[in-house]
Length: 315
Ligand SMILES: Nc1nc2c(c(=O)[nH]1)N[C@@H](CN(C=O)c1ccc(C(=O)N[C@@H](CCC(=O)O)C(=O)O)cc1)CN2
Image (cartoon, rainbow, N blue to C red; front, top):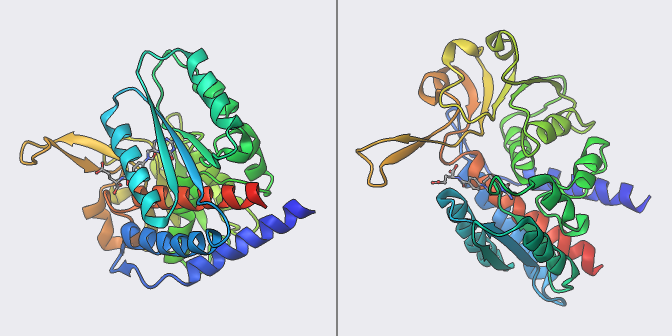
């Protein structure tokens, strides 16, 4: 029963948060940076009131190897955490760490009463079994929401921690559309961290969308996307979704972050999504850019989960 009420309270808090966000939909562009800033501001306030009589929430981030993008996301998480008053510690380990050593580190963090939230930055090197590592995290500290217990809870409509990217997408969708009920949503991509949890959230009773999940073996992808009111692309394939594949008035969420070579840029590449933004924007009701769309929401929602972990653990 307590779980039921906690879930209802969280759902209510999300509704209040979403309705308090000022308009960030300029033309069709759905500005993830602006929405993320609103989420962070609300989290900053909630952390402030939490720390009136408690230590700040504490996040442990595990980063394995020298993957440049992962290192940059972890820097982003640390900076954003500090800005809202969450303490974070990065546990950096060499690429050659053994699975046993990594599991030992997780065990230490699980047992550390001063740690509220733990996340292991993905991807991990090939020699490490990602599932075993995620499963080793205490579900009560799993602020990524990737543990099977947390994904299972999400599936039955009793979420504890909801993965950050899908919950960020839900905030963006509620910003763009008054009502998701009965909308035809096509999710392209079936990953455990985006596609599958997002499909579960979209079909939950507080959203009521009709969901189709497409993937690499889907026949005639365009027939599915053309029939959709909402298209979410999360496959990591530049410009997979083209203008002829969507209907007028569609809402498009682009989760792809692909690096394409660009000598004109100082860093030698630019980021593009899975969607042909320029061609689709004129016919879309709303569309997220890359960069500046879903990515910033991922970090903002992680901060909310970390605060939630501290609130639940210290209660
Ligand atoms: N343990 C986790 N690993 C990974 C997750 C995750 O949620 N938990 N998600 C992604 C990476 N990610 C966060 O970790 C992430 C990706 C992108 C962004 C972001 O803000 N992107 C910017 C562009 C950044 C750039 O210039 O490179 C944007 O889209 O505007 C934040 C976080 C995989 N791993």
